[in-house]
Amino acid sequence: MDNTIKLLCRQCRSKLDLTGEEPFSKVMCPVCGAVLRVPMRFGNYLLEKVCGTGGMSIVYRAIDQSRKKRIAIKILQKEFLQEDPEGQRYIAEKNTVDQIAHPGIIPIYDAGCQDSRPYLTMPYMDGGSLEEMLEKKQLPGVTQLCRWLAVIADGLACAQCNNIVHHDLKPGNILLNSSGEARLGDFDLADIRQKGDMHMINEWWASPGYVSPERLTYGGEDHRGDIFSFGVTVYELFSGKLPFPSTVNDADLLLKLRREQDFQALYELRRDIPLELSELVTRMLRYAPDARPDYAEVTRILNSSVRQCAAAEGR
Image 1 (cartoon, helix red, strand yellow):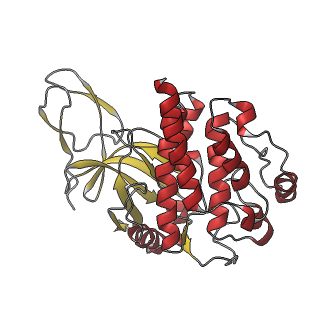
Image 2 (cartoon, helix red, strand yellow; image 1 turned 90 degrees about the horizontal axis):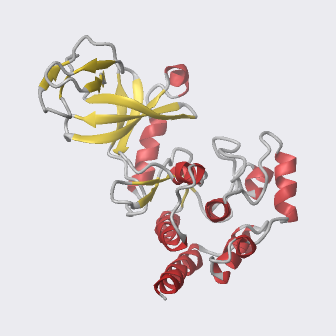
Image 3 (cartoon, helix red, strand yellow; image 1 turned 180 degrees about the vertical axis):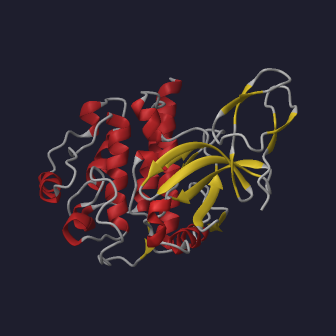
């Protein structure tokens, strides 16, 4: 197996051989003095840094030496190898995402195993997540935010056409590329189901603050559960807070809060939000799945809000 690690200095473009150096340690370029981080080899990929850890996986920024481009790679952690030794879950995630093929969905390049470690690769979204922007109070105005969310809603509509349900919609799974385009990722909980199919999914819930009432009740949901979670996401992005306080591991309290519907309408919190959009989000958060709007209406009102807000900004 080839364990050599060679790369170009980002500053002077000198060719450096870093074979044998400690992975992720810092070294100085002998030519220009620039400080470089030593990547770790993983098959044909050079892992540059950890981008995040969640569930059973670690996501790295990496260089794909075949494509000669920077990517993101998700690798199953060693302590969970016994749960998916052949990477069937990652292969299933790739097969699911391959069915969507929408500009609002992050594609998956490849899935497989390297050194008995399941992995999958995807584009590196160097603009970060909307969750990070929310935490740093760096979210854009209503027009741009609605534009991003309309693309995601259309991608979810495309997923529904293929009977695919995401099951983990939240700001942390909406990411931006270097061009400032929003994409939805992390389909590892996604599955294929028809309307009304409430059988249990793999995990009880992913993120308590966003989970639908039917998932708390039955342990499962169809695409209308995604609409609820997307409504929570939209509400949080515009208001800076969740509509329902999140209490981890207390399903009864989470369900009670959703049933009571005791939250302020978005329009009461931000007067720069179109009333139609505020009312849409309220309906997305309805307790009964049938009372929620469909994706066509969600996308239409988000696009209408883009036009209204852009026109108001231009006055």
